[in-house]
Image 1 (cartoon, one colour):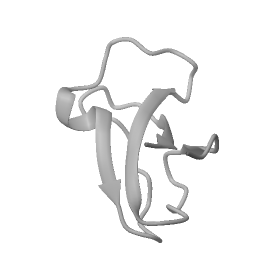
Image 2: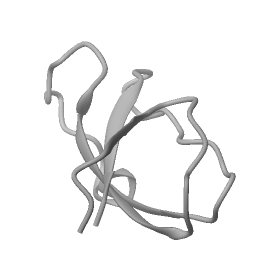
Image 3: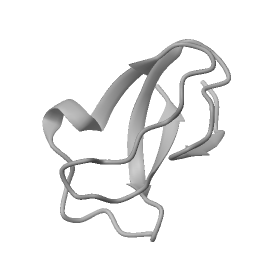
Length: 62
C-alpha cells in the first residue's frame, strides 16, 4: 500500500482504487457522499474534486 497522497488535478500514477483523505483546505467536513469517498481511476486520469461540496480533495491509493 502506498503512502503517497494525490490532489485534485493531478494525474493518477497507476490504475487503482483511491480513497478520500481530506479536502485540500485540510478539513474533512462536510463529508463527501458515499459514492465520492472511493473512486477508481485508470493511469493518467485526473483526480476529481468532491463535487457535492465543490472542494478540492486529497486522495490515497486503497
